[in-house]
Image (cartoon, rainbow, N blue to C red):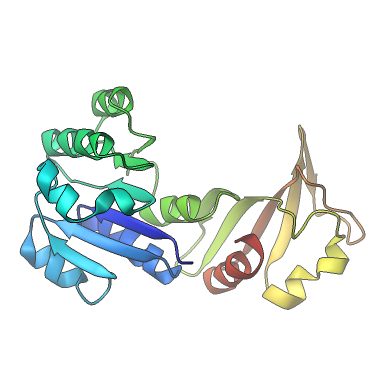
Length: 219
């Protein structure tokens, strides 16, 4: 089944998350009070809605508590961000990620029950999208418009195999440049090295190849 998300707030930050989640084959309900922004995403998101998310009855009517993860990406209106987060907690949303404007805003969000608070100046929308789509992705950094580096936690599909046995470079076009094992970092690991369950792989490649690898191996 496809993963299902709600993104509230369709500015630059929220919009980038919507686009990347859709690119990663997730279902996304996109919400904003601004009808022009909603129109912009009507052909991109699975569903695009004009709504005031500080109104609990509106949230309930949209069936938002049935979604597994809600991202609150409201822009400058800190009050709307806090009220929306409170409403989402009250109706029983399981996981809530919220954009914070500053450290004080972040403290308030943590206190009222946000599961994860992000700072746009530190965390780009694409990076966050990858993190919430896969429990195995620990970090994600864009190197250019088309290439990235990623830290991934080894899953059952990888553990117990050697690098040459997996043949990731030939099959997916990406390279494992290092392996974190406990406190050690093994740079340029040997082809006959066996991957262990607790390892963290540092991979590099084009975004298209990394996305293919994530879908085939990491999910």
